[in-house]
Length: 132
Image (cartoon, rainbow, N blue to C red; front, top):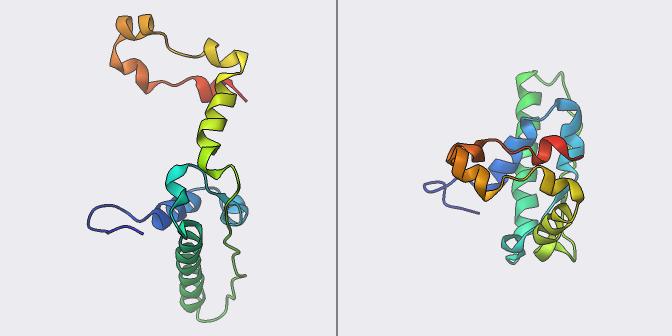
C-alpha cells in the first residue's frame, strides 16, 4: 500500500493495533474490519488490505507452528474487511450523531477555556470518557 521508506503500510498498522488488544478479542477484530472515510474508496483498497492482512496473519501462524516443532497446529484466523454503502460518509455521519447528543456539549472545551488554559487543554479529551 505505501512505500515503507516514508510510512508504515496501513495493513501493518491495523495488524499492530489488533495485536495490542487482549488476546480473546483478536479473532473477532480480524473478522470485522470496517472501512470508513473517503480515503478508503480507492479502487480495490478493501481487497488489498484484506489480502495483506491475511498474509501477515498466516505468516505469524506458520511461524508459531514451526517454533513449536509442529506440535501446535494453530486454528486459521478469518480476516474480513467490510465495505458498505455509507463508507464514504461514515466518519462524517458518526461525528454528526455524536455532536447531536446533549452530553456532547457538556464535555466540549470552549474558546474561553482554551484562551485561559492554553494549548495544553487539548491533551485532555473528556468526550470519550464520559459518553457511552
